[in-house]
Length: 390
Image 1 (cartoon, rainbow, N blue to C red):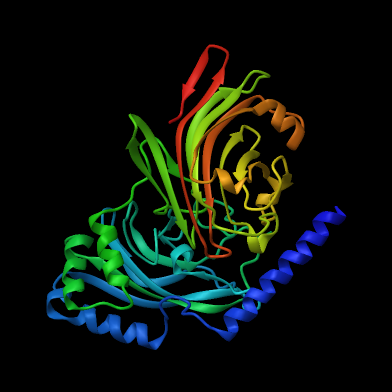
Image 2 (image 1 turned 135 degrees about the vertical axis):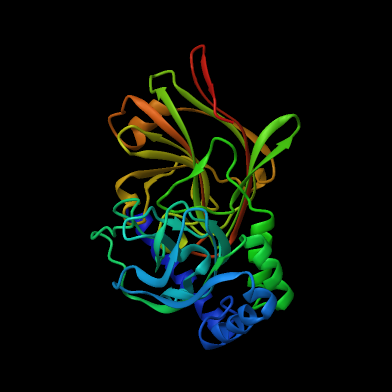
């Protein structure tokens, strides 16, 4: 424990030093919100060719306070395509240069009890599944009480300075057509081009997989083929996402999780066991009791290190096991096999009876780095029984 404490102090000191250097040599914090954002977007949507495609447009400013869901003063119907273009940041710590941008923080729902949806990026479109008055909220990484957008009182949302400016457009004839007209009219910090690319070529979750609803949809994972095998490619930058595959597999002494992975780049170069540096890539098993055990690749922590997740909510359900940390193996395809029940007993406690999901996890939101990896040949094995996940 003393060693972990010393490591934490050293890590925070390094972060503070980096924050000071960035303050002396400031870099752009992404597209700026505010009056300039709204002025440009209002002019673009007012262009005759764009206005002909727009059913409704609304501008709202979102803060990370306790005010909750904000009415956008417009209604949507099932099937409507809505584009959200957003700019700005919330600051968790300016001293440590920790901020969260529009890429991860914009959620929508139709009606006061509609299912929550997150935008895939700072500029992207959604096809609405439900109808009613449209509501938005800015929600940096944290926890929901349910899929209808109730906030968990154990994780208060206030205290973060900053704001995100949002332009919400409901189209008459679909997002792609409307955004083509909008792109012809102009752009703001590349956000219109991003939205058009998202509408034309959306990055969908691989078949059979879905994003964990708590963190929302994203553009992190995509299916690929290579060497005659299916693969999932992961590319994360200033983002967070968990991809899930549902299973129903008994957890016995002989249960094994097998996979191959090639990690090309890690999103953090500091110990990942504290919240400000908890950026990593991993594969995990979720169990019937709600716990998950995640095998991660660390930049600095020793192989075999086990620690509870340092993030609120996740510290109750998630345990990390450092499986790889040898930088010389980056860029190589590696085959892994883990005795899941024995690992669970060592890392968590009394094992449950079943595995219910396999996860792929990518976090790069805290240090805003980039993580790149690929997965292949994921399977659960117990004797002669083999469940092919990928």
